[in-house]
Length: 346
Image (tube, rainbow, N blue to C red):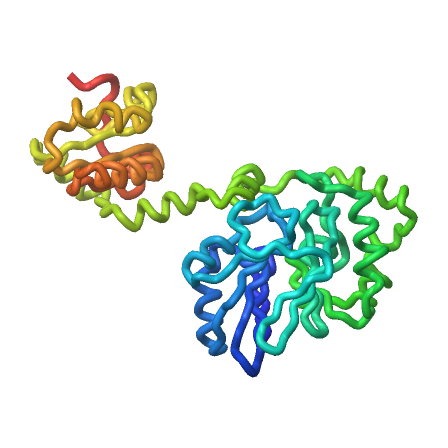
């Protein structure tokens, strides 16, 4: 069997494939690693046929929809998944054929209602149901400690103890475990009485994952992340260096428009001399009035360079083909001790 474990911070994803047919699947792929996965597939000489999420992730951005779009392959999740873009919805006990491999699913709710574990030969991909030395939390949307107890003690831990455990998260660099190891040494699995287990899970008092709202929104809906929007805009927009802008301002280039897209209070505290104010939220509504000539060269600027990048991409999409963005934003401009003007422009 072709097997690769990919680590992204504490996240784990997996490439599994059939040696004979070279058909492969990706399990729990993470959005920042899309090119890495494609490179690994090419390195192993396999073709990715399926992308699979073991559950709706709340702590990172899933790459299933992006990979499905790039590769024209189906997204697989459990039938309880709320995501509208899932192509194949598995029920408990169903399997996917991958060449001569079989990917068998087991519904294991508790961390989320749509959690499932996957068995491929001697490997068990446990998502966030069972971790090495721990279990998935149950205090996030659709979590249920009683369901997790049933999933663990009445289903998962009754499988062959020699099965290798590969979770969706691992924070201490451990490669894998086995069900036997977890039964013997996992502290949460030593609390086997149902009520005591539920009480333990309800009293963990864990901090919320970073970007939980955005992660759930994008993973459940297939919508774009802020980072993806910025990446798309960055790919469409040229940038200008701080020093180049300073030279143009000092030369009095009247054909060059500096467009500050921050709000008025930030603009009046200090802006590039000669810059016009047009807040990003008003751009589309005022563009015809404030920028009647689409052939003019326009540079957008904001505090950190993110909003101005989106603004420049919007302008280019509206026909302002000479729109560019300031690299670094006003924060970098101030730190370089370049000239500022306060208040409104005359």
